[in-house]
Figure 1 (cartoon, rainbow, N blue to C red):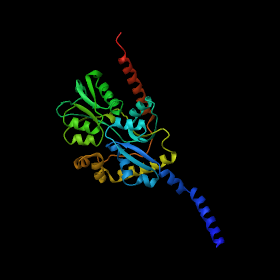
Figure 2: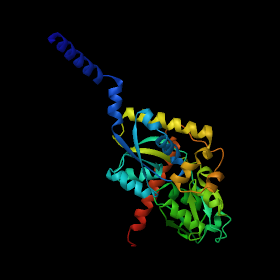
Figure 3: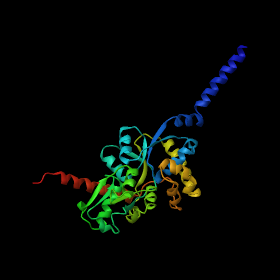
Figure 4: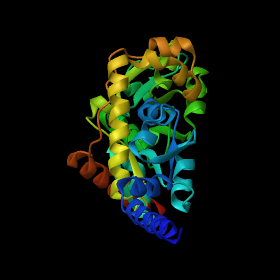
Length: 307
Protein backbone atom coordinates (compact mmCIF):
# COMPACT_ATOMS: atom_id res chain seq x y z
CA UNK A 1 0.00 0.00 0.00
CA UNK A 2 2.82 2.40 0.90
CA UNK A 3 4.60 1.54 -2.36
CA UNK A 4 1.42 2.30 -4.32
CA UNK A 5 1.01 5.68 -2.62
CA UNK A 6 4.66 6.57 -3.27
CA UNK A 7 4.29 5.68 -6.92
CA UNK A 8 1.14 7.80 -7.27
CA UNK A 9 2.82 10.71 -5.51
CA UNK A 10 5.81 10.61 -7.85
CA UNK A 11 3.52 10.28 -10.87
CA UNK A 12 1.51 13.30 -9.72
CA UNK A 13 4.64 15.40 -9.27
CA UNK A 14 6.04 14.40 -12.66
CA UNK A 15 2.73 15.20 -14.36
CA UNK A 16 2.48 18.59 -12.66
CA UNK A 17 6.04 19.55 -13.59
CA UNK A 18 5.63 18.33 -17.14
CA UNK A 19 2.31 20.16 -17.54
CA UNK A 20 3.75 23.48 -16.46
CA UNK A 21 6.34 23.39 -19.22
CA UNK A 22 4.12 22.39 -22.13
CA UNK A 23 2.94 24.69 -24.91
CA UNK A 24 -0.62 24.08 -23.76
CA UNK A 25 0.13 25.61 -20.39
CA UNK A 26 1.71 28.67 -22.01
CA UNK A 27 -1.24 29.09 -24.35
CA UNK A 28 -3.64 28.92 -21.46
CA UNK A 29 -1.79 31.74 -19.76
CA UNK A 30 -1.75 33.88 -22.91
CA UNK A 31 -5.40 33.16 -23.67
CA UNK A 32 -6.49 34.35 -20.26
CA UNK A 33 -5.32 37.93 -20.92
CA UNK A 34 -8.20 39.89 -22.46
CA UNK A 35 -7.24 42.39 -25.16
CA UNK A 36 -10.00 44.98 -25.53
CA UNK A 37 -10.13 46.44 -29.06
CA UNK A 38 -12.23 49.49 -29.97
CA UNK A 39 -14.00 49.22 -33.31
CA UNK A 40 -16.18 51.49 -35.43
CA UNK A 41 -19.12 50.44 -37.65
CA UNK A 42 -16.99 50.81 -40.77
CA UNK A 43 -15.92 48.25 -43.35
CA UNK A 44 -12.23 48.35 -42.42
CA UNK A 45 -13.23 46.76 -39.09
CA UNK A 46 -15.00 43.81 -40.74
CA UNK A 47 -12.01 41.42 -40.44
CA UNK A 48 -11.99 42.14 -36.68
CA UNK A 49 -15.72 41.49 -36.39
CA UNK A 50 -15.45 38.28 -38.40
CA UNK A 51 -12.43 36.96 -36.49
CA UNK A 52 -14.23 37.65 -33.21
CA UNK A 53 -17.69 36.35 -34.11
CA UNK A 54 -16.41 33.21 -35.87
CA UNK A 55 -13.93 32.19 -33.18
CA UNK A 56 -10.79 32.85 -35.24
CA UNK A 57 -9.10 34.84 -32.50
CA UNK A 58 -9.89 32.14 -29.96
CA UNK A 59 -8.53 29.36 -32.17
CA UNK A 60 -5.35 31.35 -32.80
CA UNK A 61 -4.81 31.69 -29.06
CA UNK A 62 -5.69 35.31 -28.28
CA UNK A 63 -8.60 36.56 -26.18
CA UNK A 64 -10.01 39.57 -28.04
CA UNK A 65 -13.00 41.52 -26.75
CA UNK A 66 -14.40 44.06 -29.23
CA UNK A 67 -15.73 47.33 -27.81
CA UNK A 68 -18.13 49.21 -30.09
CA UNK A 69 -17.88 52.96 -30.64
CA UNK A 70 -19.37 55.25 -33.27
CA UNK A 71 -16.89 58.14 -33.00
CA UNK A 72 -13.10 58.16 -33.28
CA UNK A 73 -12.64 60.67 -30.50
CA UNK A 74 -14.42 58.36 -28.04
CA UNK A 75 -12.02 55.59 -29.06
CA UNK A 76 -9.12 57.94 -28.39
CA UNK A 77 -10.38 58.78 -24.91
CA UNK A 78 -10.70 55.10 -24.00
CA UNK A 79 -7.29 54.39 -25.53
CA UNK A 80 -5.57 57.20 -23.64
CA UNK A 81 -7.08 56.34 -20.25
CA UNK A 82 -6.37 52.62 -20.54
CA UNK A 83 -9.98 51.43 -20.87
CA UNK A 84 -8.95 49.57 -24.03
CA UNK A 85 -5.68 48.07 -25.19
CA UNK A 86 -6.08 48.58 -28.95
CA UNK A 87 -8.28 50.28 -31.53
CA UNK A 88 -9.05 50.65 -35.20
CA UNK A 89 -8.00 54.17 -36.14
CA UNK A 90 -5.89 56.10 -38.64
CA UNK A 91 -2.33 57.38 -38.83
CA UNK A 92 -3.36 61.00 -38.32
CA UNK A 93 -5.12 60.20 -35.05
CA UNK A 94 -2.06 58.23 -33.89
CA UNK A 95 0.24 61.14 -34.68
CA UNK A 96 -2.06 63.45 -32.73
CA UNK A 97 -2.08 61.05 -29.77
CA UNK A 98 1.70 60.74 -29.94
CA UNK A 99 1.92 64.50 -29.51
CA UNK A 100 -0.36 64.13 -26.47
CA UNK A 101 2.21 61.70 -25.01
CA UNK A 102 0.13 58.60 -25.78
CA UNK A 103 2.44 56.18 -27.59
CA UNK A 104 1.23 53.28 -29.70
CA UNK A 105 2.36 50.19 -31.54
CA UNK A 106 0.82 49.51 -34.96
CA UNK A 107 -0.48 45.95 -35.35
CA UNK A 108 -1.54 46.27 -38.99
CA UNK A 109 -2.72 48.61 -41.67
CA UNK A 110 -6.38 48.30 -42.70
CA UNK A 111 -8.30 48.93 -45.91
CA UNK A 112 -9.98 52.10 -44.66
CA UNK A 113 -10.63 54.77 -47.27
CA UNK A 114 -12.75 57.91 -47.48
CA UNK A 115 -14.80 59.52 -50.24
CA UNK A 116 -16.18 63.03 -50.51
CA UNK A 117 -19.95 63.39 -50.88
CA UNK A 118 -22.15 66.42 -51.41
CA UNK A 119 -25.81 66.77 -50.47
CA UNK A 120 -28.56 66.81 -53.07
CA UNK A 121 -29.58 70.35 -52.20
CA UNK A 122 -26.10 71.87 -52.25
CA UNK A 123 -25.77 71.79 -56.07
CA UNK A 124 -22.03 71.18 -55.66
CA UNK A 125 -20.75 69.32 -58.71
CA UNK A 126 -17.10 70.41 -58.73
CA UNK A 127 -14.52 70.85 -55.98
CA UNK A 128 -14.26 74.61 -56.54
CA UNK A 129 -17.96 74.89 -55.69
CA UNK A 130 -17.17 73.95 -52.07
CA UNK A 131 -16.45 77.65 -51.56
CA UNK A 132 -18.65 79.06 -48.77
CA UNK A 133 -20.04 75.63 -47.87
CA UNK A 134 -19.88 73.28 -44.85
CA UNK A 135 -17.82 70.08 -44.93
CA UNK A 136 -18.25 67.50 -42.13
CA UNK A 137 -15.12 65.79 -40.78
CA UNK A 138 -13.22 65.02 -37.55
CA UNK A 139 -10.35 67.23 -36.41
CA UNK A 140 -6.86 65.72 -36.32
CA UNK A 141 -7.96 62.67 -38.25
CA UNK A 142 -7.68 61.23 -41.75
CA UNK A 143 -10.80 63.18 -42.73
CA UNK A 144 -9.23 66.43 -41.52
CA UNK A 145 -6.10 65.85 -43.59
CA UNK A 146 -8.08 64.78 -46.66
CA UNK A 147 -10.40 67.78 -46.34
CA UNK A 148 -7.43 70.13 -46.33
CA UNK A 149 -5.96 68.42 -49.38
CA UNK A 150 -9.31 68.77 -51.17
CA UNK A 151 -9.42 72.49 -50.41
CA UNK A 152 -5.81 72.98 -51.54
CA UNK A 153 -6.31 71.02 -54.76
CA UNK A 154 -9.32 73.19 -55.64
CA UNK A 155 -7.24 76.31 -54.88
CA UNK A 156 -9.83 77.57 -52.46
CA UNK A 157 -9.18 79.84 -49.53
CA UNK A 158 -9.00 77.66 -46.44
CA UNK A 159 -11.27 79.89 -44.37
CA UNK A 160 -13.92 79.81 -47.11
CA UNK A 161 -14.65 76.09 -46.64
CA UNK A 162 -16.22 75.65 -43.23
CA UNK A 163 -15.03 72.36 -41.78
CA UNK A 164 -17.65 71.21 -39.29
CA UNK A 165 -16.60 68.67 -36.67
CA UNK A 166 -19.01 65.72 -36.75
CA UNK A 167 -17.31 62.80 -35.01
CA UNK A 168 -20.05 60.18 -35.03
CA UNK A 169 -20.02 58.34 -38.37
CA UNK A 170 -23.76 57.59 -38.24
CA UNK A 171 -24.64 61.21 -37.49
CA UNK A 172 -22.37 62.39 -40.31
CA UNK A 173 -24.20 60.09 -42.72
CA UNK A 174 -27.57 61.31 -41.49
CA UNK A 175 -26.55 64.95 -41.87
CA UNK A 176 -25.41 64.58 -45.48
CA UNK A 177 -28.50 62.52 -46.37
CA UNK A 178 -30.75 65.23 -44.95
CA UNK A 179 -28.74 68.17 -46.34
CA UNK A 180 -27.80 69.44 -42.88
CA UNK A 181 -24.25 69.84 -44.18
CA UNK A 182 -23.16 70.51 -47.75
CA UNK A 183 -20.41 67.91 -47.95
CA UNK A 184 -18.91 65.09 -45.88
CA UNK A 185 -16.09 62.58 -45.97
CA UNK A 186 -17.45 59.05 -45.54
CA UNK A 187 -15.98 55.56 -45.27
CA UNK A 188 -17.80 52.37 -46.25
CA UNK A 189 -20.50 51.21 -45.70
CA UNK A 190 -21.80 54.71 -44.95
CA UNK A 191 -20.59 55.81 -48.39
CA UNK A 192 -22.76 53.20 -50.12
CA UNK A 193 -25.72 54.08 -47.91
CA UNK A 194 -25.32 57.70 -49.04
CA UNK A 195 -25.15 56.76 -52.73
CA UNK A 196 -28.34 54.73 -52.40
CA UNK A 197 -30.30 57.88 -51.52
CA UNK A 198 -28.78 59.83 -54.43
CA UNK A 199 -26.13 61.71 -52.45
CA UNK A 200 -23.46 62.67 -55.01
CA UNK A 201 -19.98 61.12 -54.83
CA UNK A 202 -17.64 63.94 -55.75
CA UNK A 203 -14.24 62.39 -55.15
CA UNK A 204 -12.47 59.25 -53.90
CA UNK A 205 -10.17 61.26 -51.65
CA UNK A 206 -7.96 58.40 -50.44
CA UNK A 207 -7.30 57.29 -54.01
CA UNK A 208 -6.91 60.79 -55.43
CA UNK A 209 -4.23 61.74 -52.90
CA UNK A 210 -2.72 58.23 -52.68
CA UNK A 211 -3.03 57.94 -48.91
CA UNK A 212 -3.42 54.68 -47.00
CA UNK A 213 -4.21 55.81 -43.50
CA UNK A 214 -6.21 53.05 -41.79
CA UNK A 215 -4.53 51.06 -39.00
CA UNK A 216 -5.14 48.92 -35.92
CA UNK A 217 -2.86 50.03 -33.08
CA UNK A 218 -2.20 49.02 -29.49
CA UNK A 219 -0.92 51.08 -26.59
CA UNK A 220 2.79 50.53 -26.07
CA UNK A 221 3.77 47.45 -24.07
CA UNK A 222 0.24 46.05 -23.81
CA UNK A 223 0.45 43.32 -26.49
CA UNK A 224 3.02 40.52 -26.23
CA UNK A 225 4.86 39.11 -29.25
CA UNK A 226 2.89 35.87 -28.81
CA UNK A 227 -0.38 37.80 -28.91
CA UNK A 228 0.75 39.70 -32.02
CA UNK A 229 1.40 36.42 -33.83
CA UNK A 230 -2.00 35.10 -32.82
CA UNK A 231 -3.66 38.35 -33.91
CA UNK A 232 -1.94 38.16 -37.29
CA UNK A 233 -3.02 34.56 -37.82
CA UNK A 234 -6.66 35.27 -37.05
CA UNK A 235 -6.78 38.58 -38.94
CA UNK A 236 -5.28 36.99 -42.07
CA UNK A 237 -7.75 34.11 -41.85
CA UNK A 238 -10.63 36.59 -41.68
CA UNK A 239 -9.31 38.51 -44.70
CA UNK A 240 -8.99 35.28 -46.70
CA UNK A 241 -12.55 34.29 -45.86
CA UNK A 242 -13.92 37.71 -46.84
CA UNK A 243 -11.98 37.73 -50.11
CA UNK A 244 -13.09 34.20 -50.97
CA UNK A 245 -16.79 34.49 -50.13
CA UNK A 246 -17.42 38.22 -50.66
CA UNK A 247 -19.13 40.81 -48.52
CA UNK A 248 -22.65 39.65 -49.27
CA UNK A 249 -21.91 36.26 -47.68
CA UNK A 250 -21.64 38.11 -44.38
CA UNK A 251 -24.64 40.36 -44.94
CA UNK A 252 -26.30 39.53 -41.62
CA UNK A 253 -23.14 40.46 -39.73
CA UNK A 254 -22.85 43.72 -41.65
CA UNK A 255 -26.45 44.69 -40.97
CA UNK A 256 -26.15 43.96 -37.25
CA UNK A 257 -22.64 45.23 -36.58
CA UNK A 258 -22.80 48.31 -38.81
CA UNK A 259 -26.50 49.11 -38.60
CA UNK A 260 -27.09 49.19 -42.34
CA UNK A 261 -29.94 47.92 -44.50
CA UNK A 262 -30.01 44.89 -46.75
CA UNK A 263 -30.08 47.29 -49.70
CA UNK A 264 -26.79 48.84 -48.56
CA UNK A 265 -25.20 45.40 -48.20
CA UNK A 266 -26.35 44.36 -51.68
CA UNK A 267 -24.95 47.60 -53.13
CA UNK A 268 -21.47 47.31 -51.61
CA UNK A 269 -18.56 46.90 -54.05
CA UNK A 270 -18.38 43.28 -55.18
CA UNK A 271 -14.59 43.19 -55.47
CA UNK A 272 -13.67 44.85 -52.18
CA UNK A 273 -10.28 43.35 -51.21
CA UNK A 274 -9.04 42.91 -47.65
CA UNK A 275 -5.28 42.72 -47.21
CA UNK A 276 -3.25 40.66 -44.76
CA UNK A 277 -1.45 42.16 -41.81
CA UNK A 278 1.11 44.72 -42.96
CA UNK A 279 2.86 47.87 -41.87
CA UNK A 280 2.25 51.44 -43.16
CA UNK A 281 4.20 52.78 -46.10
CA UNK A 282 6.97 55.13 -45.04
CA UNK A 283 5.68 57.82 -47.39
CA UNK A 284 2.31 57.80 -45.60
CA UNK A 285 4.01 58.09 -42.20
CA UNK A 286 6.14 60.98 -43.46
CA UNK A 287 3.23 62.84 -45.05
CA UNK A 288 1.14 62.54 -41.90
CA UNK A 289 3.97 63.72 -39.66
CA UNK A 290 4.72 66.71 -41.90
CA UNK A 291 1.05 67.62 -42.23
CA UNK A 292 0.50 67.53 -38.48
CA UNK A 293 3.63 69.57 -37.82
CA UNK A 294 2.57 72.27 -40.27
CA UNK A 295 -1.01 72.29 -38.99
CA UNK A 296 -0.02 72.73 -35.35
CA UNK A 297 2.58 75.37 -36.18
CA UNK A 298 -0.04 77.30 -38.11
CA UNK A 299 -2.54 77.02 -35.26
CA UNK A 300 0.07 78.28 -32.80
CA UNK A 301 0.64 81.31 -35.00
CA UNK A 302 -3.07 81.97 -35.28
CA UNK A 303 -3.40 81.89 -31.48
CA UNK A 304 -0.81 84.66 -31.06
CA UNK A 305 -2.24 88.12 -30.23
CA UNK A 306 -2.21 90.68 -33.02
CA UNK A 307 0.75 93.05 -32.57
